[in-house]
Amino acid sequence: MKKLFAVLLLTVILGSAFAQDSTIVGNWKFSGIFPDTAGGKINNEMYFLKRGIHGLAVDPDGKIWIQPYYATDSIAVYIPGTNDLVGGKKQLTRVLYCFNPDGTQASFSPIFHVTTTGGVVDTLGGTLIVDKGAWTWSGNTGRGLGLDKDGNILASYFDQVIRIDYKTGQGIDKVKPVSGASLTACWGTNDGIFTAHVVGGNPLKLYDNEMNFQKDVLEATKGFSRSFAVREINGETYIFWAGYSNRRIIIYKYGGLFGSTDSVATIENVSSESFAWQPETNWLWVGSGSKTDMPNQSDSNEVYRYRPSVWYAFDVSDPLHPVLKDSIAWFTMKRNPLEDVRPRGMGFSPDGKTAYVCIFNTDRPCVEKHVFVGEALGTDDKATKINGYMLGQNYPNPFNPTTKIGFTIPKAGHVTLKVYNMLGQEVATLVDKYMNAGTDIVNFNATNLPSGTYIYQLKSGSVTITKKMMLVK
Image 1: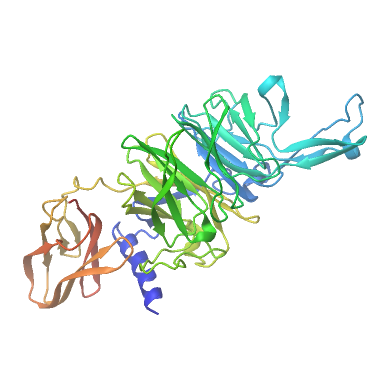
Image 2 (image 1 turned 90 degrees about the horizontal axis):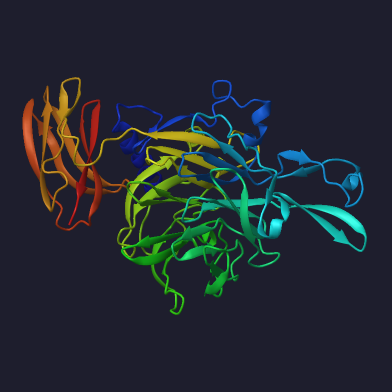
């Protein structure tokens, strides 16, 4: 019962901060299915959007790349040296889609074939297999998308990574790290290109930026994982391993070509299957889990209240102490909290103000667009007023460790002013009493609280007003 209350409280807190708009979660507002076809309804031409999406990435030009897991198109595959189709018909295949921000397809989308290393022409989502004169077609499922250091697309198709020029849609090169082992999304940094696999026990490998093998960064990963992320932070490289079956994110510090890579921290109680980096803030966004792999299930003694099918943002500028900052919920979850949708992809526009999220499912539109609607912390000094009730922005903001909060009530009544963390947990009660009409100012001392974003909420009668503040130590 307490867990349910905390989940509901977080929803109320995050929603009520923005004029009671039911489509807003955290600092983000749901703005429709992407791409918007026929007023947000998916038509036959966009049927692929109702298949399970397994990869989503946004390139430096702001184009949105979408990778279905399943076959969504067909292709003619001929027996070599003949005009005969393999199996006597066109073969179903996976293709890669690319959209402009306005929802129109890029000129080279969808992509069926790419020419890569050695001039070999590859079909992205399938392979022609020759065995003792017999010809068969094998589908290569879409396993995830990432970016290299230059913004080119790293597209995982079953056990191979194909790099694609984000400007032209042309193939650059490819690699097959472990034959027969399905891949997760791959990531590129100045160190090179990191690859990993869904099934634990396989190596996490590093290739240089020309796809030459360098080393096994980890000899064997832990747990099943559909995503991971790599980032250079404060001059060091860190690997964030989703490992959803571990019920936590493991944070590794990469040791370089000649050093060891060791775990240094965790983010507990999330069963993440997707990651994204938000431009400007450099926050790491992680999927919390789903009905299939629920959050809040790790064996840690720490108490959390993450909700399923929500992406949460963490400030990892200090990788050893991630700080929760923001959230975006899959919009349909407002109708059915335990719907079986699994957060599998996320990406941000280059300015960080538009988020695209996708789920793995087979019977509904799979990509949503959310836009940023909040004010930067520390810049919003306006009071919020409802029916004569007023809650002022705390001052100073950000603060350390004390700040003042002013409020006004137009008539006598019972008043509460409480402070919550971003998980919806109450951390302080500043006012809880009957008060006469008028204005008051209270002090808040956060000496015993960690740095981060906090929510303070005024309630009196039927009116609830909520605002945010930031503690920086």
